[in-house]
Amino acid sequence: MDQLKILGGRPLNGEVPISGAKNAALPLLCAALLTDQPVTLRNVPRLQDVRTMLDLLAYIGVQTRHDEYGAVHLHADRLGEPEAPYELVRSMRASILALGPLMARIGYAKVALPGGCAIGSRPVDQHIRGLQAMGAQTLVEHGNIIATLPRGASRLKGARITTEMVTVTGTENLLMAAVLAEGETVLTNAAQEPEIVDLAEMLIAMGAHIEGHGTSTIHIEGVQALHGCDHAVVADRIEAGTFLCAVAATGGDVFLRHARGEHLQAVIDKLRALGADISCNGDGVRIQSPGAASGKLQAQSFRTTEYPGFPTDMQAQFMALNCVAHGTSTITENIFENRFMHVGELARLGANIQADGRVAVVEGGAQLTGAAVSSTDLRASACLVIAGLVASGETLVGELQHLDRGYDGIEVKLRGLGADIARIPCQRAQ
Ligand SMILES: CC(=O)N[C@H]1[C@@H](OP(=O)(O)OP(=O)(O)OC[C@H]2O[C@@H](n3ccc(=O)[nH]c3=O)[C@H](O)[C@@H]2O)O[C@H](CO)[C@@H](O)[C@@H]1O
Ligand SMILES: C=C(OP(=O)(O)O)C(=O)O
Image (tube, rainbow, N blue to C red):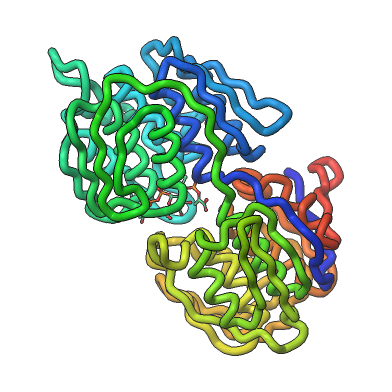
């Protein structure tokens, strides 16, 4: 397995382009299942999760092509009796996003249950309950969710659905199911993330009737058929947030081109309180920071919540920053029950953190020193990269399959900003 070798202690300066969002691209790719006409998606990040999703869609019968300009061309004109097999689903939970569109388009879906994963148990009961409310008959058998329409029915039926908790992919699945259902669907307690808004905008461009996306109540009036579209994926707020934390920690002056400051307000508020100077305009976000070594950064307590609150997908990266800023901070993880696995690895670099259940108390001001560490999940890997950028000496980050799921060339981008970071291919990694 490849490793990242980082020599810490350098400030970051310059400009970095922010890629399209993983968590938007994955549902948008699945939305191509909703029409028999060609769909073009632009600004699609080059990530392992995108490759896995394209493999899955190809398996289902969709023609797919990722071109050299970052656009993906999809054509779902011939769908058979599609299956999303466990081999593809287990490496990427977002495969569950094929369920809603397949039910909407052909009234049949067989998707392997994604199972638990590193950050928590992550059930999909709300996806299934919502589809049942729209008339789907579902069966869990041999590890698969099999969904069908009742005898004589040709479409799902619109319904009022209130999910028991706010779920991002659950909202996306039900939104995609509802656009071709008969009559009106109202999703209450819906997720409000920018990725939901991006999906709704793509569906509207395909001819769907949707109102209220970006709020907790979404109204959808089903239509008979959708047409093709050409849509660009929204910029990745979590990639942008990761770079903001990296620059805050190392110090420097960086412009994040394409980043959308309005999608990162909770993180930006905390970074400003910590001591970074941040300005946003229509082209991107600029951060200037004196860096942790200046002794001027003040650690910030926060609790993760649904959008627009502080995102769980930024918790690990901000924790790395709190380790080197001054003062004690308390971090509460409210979304996933097991998302502190980076704590042990940060400790190997010299961090001082006590985690108990969903709460971690970070004693700031640590002088981190480089060591070999292992990623346990996607954002944990990003947090270790940030820690490595500030640690003295050499840090080796292993298990990069997690990082590669969600960051498009992070080491190339960081090197462009002045970091001393290199990927060591597995045969040379020691
Ligand atoms: C591909 C993608 O977009 N992934 C994001 C999505 O994951 P994902 O959509 O899987 O996360 P959810 O919003 O569904 O999960 C929120 C909480 O609800 C629980 N839950 C969810 C659905 C369900 O049927 N039953 C249930 O109990 C989950 O276990 C979790 O505790 O939102 C998460 C929360 O912002 C992010 O961390 C992920 O990066
Ligand atoms: C947890 C994440 O992704 P996924 O839902 O794909 O596991 C993430 O993007 O941080």
